[in-house]
Image (cartoon, rainbow, N blue to C red; front, side, top):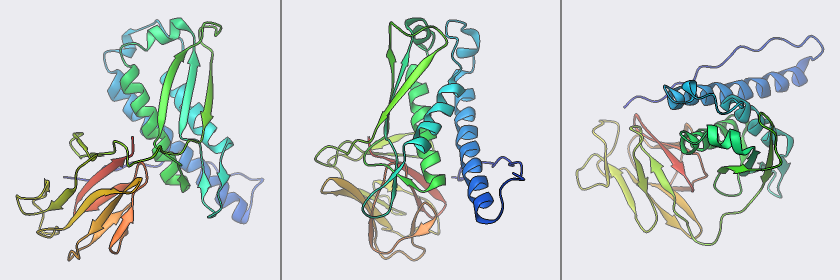
Length: 253
């Protein structure tokens, strides 16, 4: 199974910025563009033959994506560990007519918006306090074509919750109450036919209020977001866990 490749968009130079300031601005602009590009591709797949034929909503999905990413940037803060924390729960308030226009694609749309938030967080090095949640709410006072978004930072509730693994095929594998073993042998929960994967390569399981991935001393190691781990490491919402050439996304919600 091949990893997903996301192409980056070029950024125009800013003549008023120099040195580290320009580098930081370009990096932020690039991450913003990459998150939106990934979101746009997801929306294109999602709305094929659905949204393009619907004229009920005067709000384009990409407008929601842009606003969500800007909301993260505008409301970031730093916790006691020095990590940059951003909102993880987003509520879009839209008119009844626009909400009706999204009826056929609402579930897929909020999924893509959530993934856009995770993508932007990975690129910017942001952290969430809990699982990402996006909802579209009807506001009878809102005019068609207009919308507002409210965001909050909300910790995960007690217990490990109902996390899941998203396989390359799109299949979702629930984690709650299970220890997921990964390796080449058929007795593993996830069997990977890859010479770079050990027979009993590793496992993913609940630990307290979170989930951890454990490498069982495999020959080629286990990676989280491209970085090889030693022993066990806690998972954050949206992390990409790699076993050989297979890349699996962890979702906390």
